Image (cartoon, rainbow, N blue to C red; front, side, top):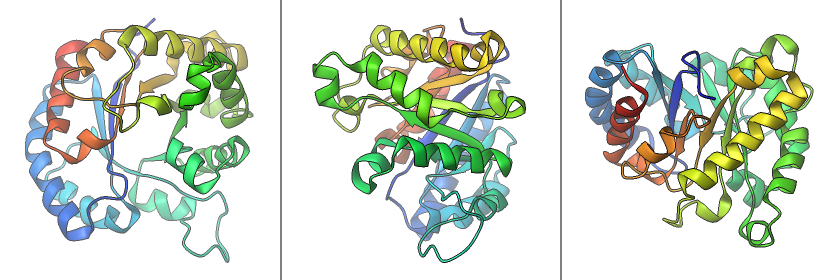
Amino acid sequence: MKTPARTAIIAGNWKMNFGPLQAATFAGEILSDLVPLVEASSHIISIICPPAISLAAVQHAMREQYHQRIELGAQNMYFEEKGAFTGELAPSMVSELCTSVILGHSERRAYFGESDELVNKKTLAALRHGLRPIVCIGERPDQYDAGQTREVIASQSLHSFGRLPAEHVKEVVIAYEPIWAIGTGKAATAEGAGEVISYIRQLFGEMYGDEAALAVRILYGGSVTSDNIGEFMAHPDIDGALVGGASIKPDFVEIVRKTIETVGM
């Protein structure tokens, strides 16, 4: 079901790695290789998502080696506009530096107790501020083992990206991250991931219509490497990847390169 209108996205989630100095250095190194790659293809966007404290440093590096299809993203934000929320970032703050924001990552859900309802509030706030939300959903290992994947995905889909304004539905990006595959080196198969992602697209269509389902980009996230990205990108319903551990290594450039080889120039 992949269409030419769905530009592939390879997003790198640096998680809690690289302070400003190290982030600027690493960004400069990979940008020197990324820029020529994306210049040669009109079918891909690469998003770099460093820790909040390093966003400005990476933005500076990106200005020095600029390409419009290499973007800056945040790893999280709060839904309130301002106020007494120590340690949080308002959507307006994030939008000054970033085009995108990761929301509802499995680590935010597991370690910080984020609910589907909270993720939904953040998603709506991101859209109000012109940010592209990358909304994460996925089943835990125990749910996977119990055969509850579809049940979990359906509930998370309904509550995490429900109530979207019609004019903003196509701007949402969904990341399917099977939690049992994150940081384990045990990626889902392209067939298995594609089956779940096809189901997510079906659910999105039931919520917002066939046109929205065809337009929404759905990424795979879970131990993505340059060795397996080609298999995932060959699936018609998989539109890119949310890359974790490999995004803070030179392998990230190879993931982008192999994505381009798969989706074309």
